[in-house]
Image 1 (spheres, helix red, strand yellow):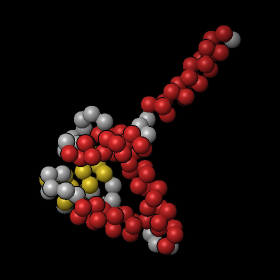
Image 2 (cartoon, rainbow, N blue to C red; image 1 turned 135 degrees about the horizontal axis):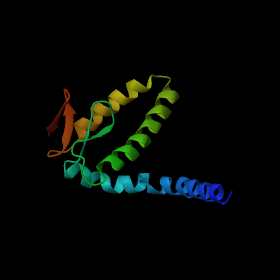
Image 3 (cartoon, helix red, strand yellow; image 1 turned 90 degrees about the vertical axis):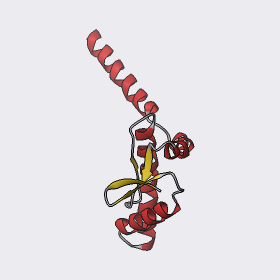
Image 4 (cartoon, rainbow, N blue to C red; image 1 turned 60 degrees about the horizontal axis):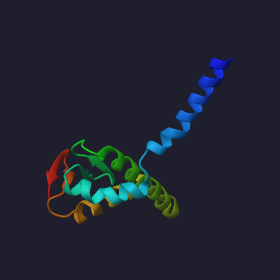
Length: 114
């Protein structure tokens, strides 16, 4: 019985700790420009970020920002009664156009430095 209580306490502690380890949106926003400038992440035609070089917090930044983008694209699609893929495509085109020189974009499946 004591072992079961200990296991339960461990599982509970783990369940509370794991979300705390995930990067929050605000922290990801703060790190995004640096990650782009360092060539760790880039824009894709699908409207989402992807990892160019898996260094530092690149993966966590991509995950947090992409989740926020996915939520916003879904909201826009529902509001205008259009497919989410249409919103993603338009957002991807705009993001690539607005990407400053020296940062990476995915063109025809290859990372290209603008």
